[in-house]
Image (tube, rainbow, N blue to C red):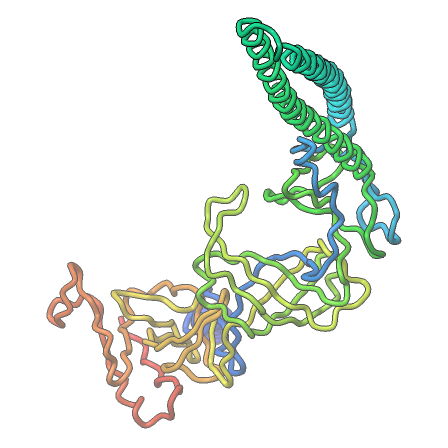
Length: 464
């Protein structure tokens, strides 16, 4: 009987041990923090604020390849590119790089040629008319002169005739003299008229000749040649589209392409109106290339536009920013897409954490700080921020761990305030009185003994 009781007691003890060991292990685990929130460490080092944008390489110095400069004088205001050599081609001075469509100017040439022929015919007709009119006027004047001479002889012979005959002879002489004077005036008038008429038709004839010469000169300019050696880059219109075969070229801006100076390049980018206030001339820029992500370039902001503009297919206002590329090499080409990281601010030896870690409740910024197995709701003071992180000027120290999301029992944690904090905790409805606060608040009394930027002591975990 004793052996049976002894063995039964042994079995009970063994069962308790077998059941109690896993239970104790589970209880030990439950005492550890069971928070699934991701934590991040407070980093210490240089903090950089950047404005990132895409841009495009371009050459500030270039030679323009243009169509005929006086096309408007030939009434050619829109010209169509019929053909153009591929972009990036290396050309020599005098090489033909593009051809313009000659159909419209050929019709203009025909019209001007016909107008010239008509003007020449009018000139010839006016010349013949003037010749005939002046010839007749001269003949009439010579006839009048002979008639006057005859009347003079008759008057002289009438000196010995009766007074009435003598008087008739004098009257006839006076009439002949007046006729001669009138014919002389008519000749002078007709001469002036002929000169004016010939000047008129001659001016029109000269105008048509000059216009024909201009049209021929413009037509010769439809074969566009390179003015200098270099690499051909297509010109872009106001909407960003390149001028290629089939594009229209205006008479007031006849540029077809450019020959850039590749020894100096810049990246042209457009920054939105929110970020442009952060930029200033002289700020450093880290430049990358979409064509070669391994290539790293450096640059500096050289120009920030004062006035915004609206780019095609965009509703937002943007500002043009030009960035000089330091030490460009021969692999860079205008038109390449760049990634520009403009460093607008650099803070040395700063504490910074991810933006996700900073919460805000009723106007007070705070973080969930983890120390061992406990979590405290710690007020912090923040500084400058970039796209990913923010500077913490007070409330944390290096290597502290902060949660990136609220823990499960976050509503039960009291807010640990910084000593001398001037940020009031706003109650619902905007009242900042302590009596109406729904958020429990604690003041970190040990913060005065810590150096600036140090974290507060861990808040004991609440019981119950």
